[in-house]
Length: 395
View 1 (cartoon, rainbow, N blue to C red):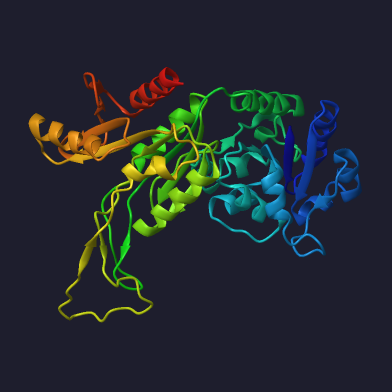
View 2: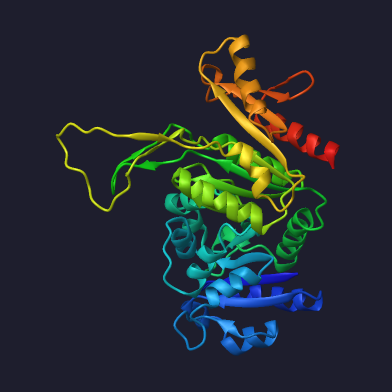
């Protein structure tokens, strides 16, 4: 296993070095990146000696200009230990100004587990901004380990103490056991809505939040599948463990799908994105159209993506799952709408939902095969289970 250890300035740095020795003895490869303040607590020679590899501590050092990218590509897991209050704030607010913070952002969305091990004074740990930053990182899928209670370096007693190295090592090992050796399928999920440019700043969009796709991605990842999420601008994103890609307009989504499907042997595509049926003819220029004047737009229809996915795929046995949204439709209209999706070709399953039946606290679906009875699905988690079961059935 390739472990990337990120360290920030704390008296706990000395204790964190025990992880390096333990991981190396267990046969793992380890690289270390540090903030500038770490040097006040433990020296570069110590970290290089224990890791057996050069230290990354300066993004502008000779030969290290791309180190934040290459290390992010190299790692199987990223562990931030110790993580100070300052570093948590920078992660949560997108500040990227040194070796550790640039590396953190470069590792984001690559599908590797991100583990944060806080260490600080108890009052600093309890500070409202620190707790808000922790909650923000956790909402993004980061594994923030708890702090221990006990005697702190300052002489006070309370929460904020870094977990013992043996406990950290065990938690990381358990996490990696969950994410390695998987026997699941490789799945690409689209989510969120397209934005069709009118001019340099305006666009035609829709109300899709991308929540269904994000929660499906998380649930299928938890079921052992290797998941890539391709989401629209502003869409809800899945958490750590899911590889992330993004699109904006219909043309961008089309291009991304072609590239991803050509590059990897996906077993299934779950196409949940809310794709615009129209693009603006000659829209998206570099100028901003004047305000206060009558504006006429010419809309041109976009081709359907669903029937083309299998032809773009390296895997011609690709399972294609489409979504069909209706608005206040009766059962006859629903069945006609679903039948049209199947009639367009190359779709194995269609997931139907109706806008009038979507509630913040509940979201039900109906899963259709071209032949056979439709299945009622209670929620997103149940939908993930049903789709996973179908993929195992056809494997």
